[in-house]
Length: 243
Length: 79
Image (cartoon, rainbow over all chains, first blue to last red; front, side, top):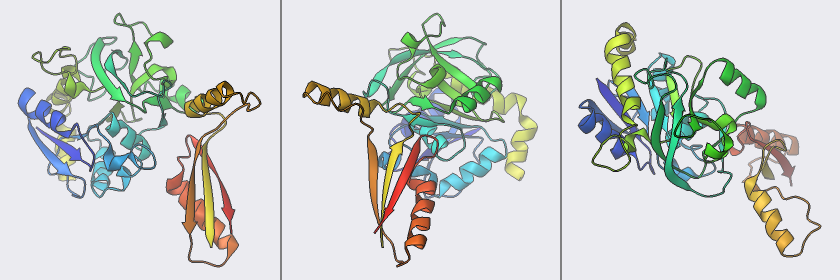
């Protein structure tokens, strides 16, 4: 299966994502420049971290005008699995592929640290290999990860089980003291209504190899989508390529 | 015509930068500054001489790009 990693001017986690997909997971992976309009046979699309278009105006605001985003939107609308990591999450919000917006961290600081997140939902392409309630230790690195949505939208997200990852303690307890950025409801990751588009602030691609200190908890996110594409969604996957 | 667009966080959205600036002003002795909201300011030079048209155009681009309607609102001045 093939991972397509979108490269915006200012992306800086694109090679990490490509490395994780190709060298750690052993899958085909290709970096795709934002001016392309073709996802080149992608089974999975990754919008990586960084500072797309310099984060001018607002984080992720200009990236939605990149030519490749038309193909990303069409792929997502056909049910293709799309994950936005950190800045990629911000791009998905600005593009309207996920609801809500990001505010500055309540600390006003760039938070760069390991956090714990609890897997709230396991019926998405990016969490299907996790167990419900599993706690992952994954690093964050962002200045604007303070997720905001109006109260009625938050209620809808919770009611629809669209909150996929939530900041917690190492033992999975939710609470404000475990929330690194002030994010509403401790949201670290969420999915769209059809559950194939996922955004998350922590960086799973930075926690995939034991040679790096910090563990390999991020692997389950990427292994999930390999499982999802190769096993459970074969008919839909073929449809993605023929439609 | 020139349109001036002021974009600020909605009143319901906490503005951590504004809060820090207000705290700094308090420490400078400006205790009478109750609150600060930080925002963005845009000047648009528009190829129209009609104020109504200019305002409509400025509102359109503010809705589409300059402001994120989830968290921000805007105000427009034309001159």
